[in-house]
Length: 229
Ligand code: 5RP
Image (tube, rainbow, N blue to C red):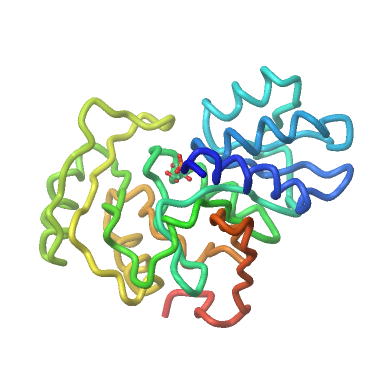
């Protein structure tokens, strides 16, 4: 199977995690596009969606699915999104598509994060994929120096501005052995909007597309501290 066929497989499988009558949290990316297309087949059975990007909102609307503002909802039963990397505890690198800030906002509203990914995304240690960091423009140089001090080679994402009007720095070459600690550290640097480590908002379930079919990974609650120290 191609990588895209594996993404389609898990996009379809994620429908099992959508409660009838619910508002669904919807992520961003090529895997989620398959999920949105599958969701269109059951659109009469859901109340709508809260989306993490303009791209996903447009695709949802094109299918006739109502898109609610995140400020209109207090709680979502589930947030379904892809990942650039996911480790054995459900911690992820996200933001390859540049939607990390809105993804973390919608994930924060959700009772559980269901990650959908092809098998290539499953890693032992996060960091082979460059870590995205969205910044306020005037902090870009200082955040770059701080990331370099952690050992990263920093590449500003060329020609890119997020849905929030901010640039993204991609930090290459980090080996993220304690995702929660690094998320907490980078989050508190002045001018950082969002770091693309999802440890506090890690996945509870991952539907992994493999040659043998969909493999369901469950991540134990409490395996990662829930808060910064
Ligand atoms: C977008 C993301 C995506 O979830 C991540 O990049 C995976 O994308 P794809 O499903 O296209 O492989 O974080 O900001």
